[in-house]
Length: 291
Image 1 (cartoon, rainbow, N blue to C red):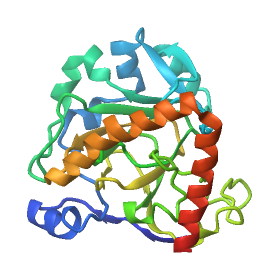
Image 2: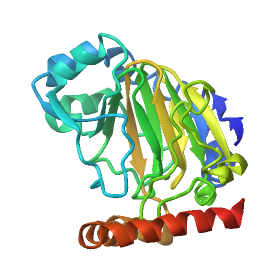
Image 3: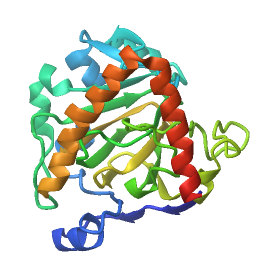
Image 4: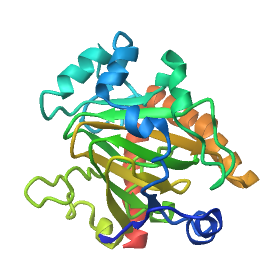
């Protein structure tokens, strides 16, 4: 892989952001965007536990889904308080995915502002919390709705690997899905890495970015960017999602949600083996074209 560091700025004007990052679709970390929010000082595990400790949440482990796994199927359930207790004891590869904590504690919405000076189109009904124990992994994928993301880390550190959408075939994208067939777990550690470059040689030529997010860092991920995340510490982050400004971008997001995903779900249920075999052939055929 050809990786470069994500640009990091303390603050940025709307004009520079749009010219250097938003319009050319390049990621950037804005370190102090969240510093004026009350959330920057207030939000921590114990504060959230006091507010939503009794709420039952779906948990996801580090096992990479296979061709027959229904999308977003939870691996376990616990109360938020029990989950916090579990991951506070040490490495625990369990994540909470797309937790809308604000439905349960709407007062939290007063603790941050929407950075509309940078871009428009925020989906304000759905700010989402992403949490994980130390060693938990979010496997390589792109967001199905093709929205732009401002991802702010509050507690702990997180390593993020990013690729533009155009690198999809080098990443062995599964047809009719938003997932990579390859396992990028611990890709940066020769002893622990699960990334099989002999089986997936096109990945060697993929061009992307990497960064470690710390408390208060906000990562701009342009629409359709592939991302793989590993929690170096137990922590959580919040994502602000913004729809693309173009009609085509919005239409593609709708197709992914209601067309592509429906086709994949139906065929996984009705003809799983033929569908799986066709996907496997297509994945490697596409990769061979771009090696």
